Image (cartoon, helix red, strand yellow):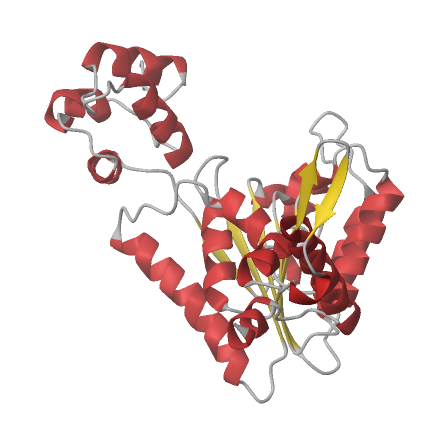
Length: 310
């Protein structure tokens, strides 16, 4: 049991391990105590034993301040990654290779990578996959979804705090999702948070003193980042494209669609498709046997703006 617990408590501080043991002990005590009408009856406390199931329950509520945001990343990766082209595999292999090279490099301690492309092309899922596969001891996600209602100063403080913690670990990765929303950028004006922008620029360029850091960010508008002079903060930029017809068919086959031939004519008139939109259209058009209704598929594609009507 102890070796298993040691693996599960990676990045726990001494105080956090103490809290974990106390939480597990409370669960063991609950098992040992039996309720009776009018009061409580207990067995002999000296016979009470901590079991693995007590620690497993405690681990669901005691989380380390340092470590991996695995739950947040798993949400980003809901549904998994569908491989649809050699280019996609090569891009992920290239990014993964650079991350691996950083680990063994004697001179480089900071790697910043940007995944850019239209909204819905799966950038966040790719970033989450790369982060989880890295097996870094410290991986944190900075997402505008987790900062709803937070003030401009609060967002900047949160970003700075995550990077400060990352610099304390020998090997860290920070995933920054949806840069435009994080910057509160709007086209009308245009307006954005200069405080958040300057915080991000500073964090992107700050070299770790001791460990190594990978920053992996996503953007749906690389032109905006260029205007804000933020693009130069990234060493490497990967473009995540929309799907062509053959790639869309590969995705549909991966979903288990049993009649892709019937909807192929519709795909011929489609524009470049973000994979998230195609997945939504497919699920809305499938029955329980995974057969796609061609008419419903075409109508939903048109409603989603994926058909070239000209």
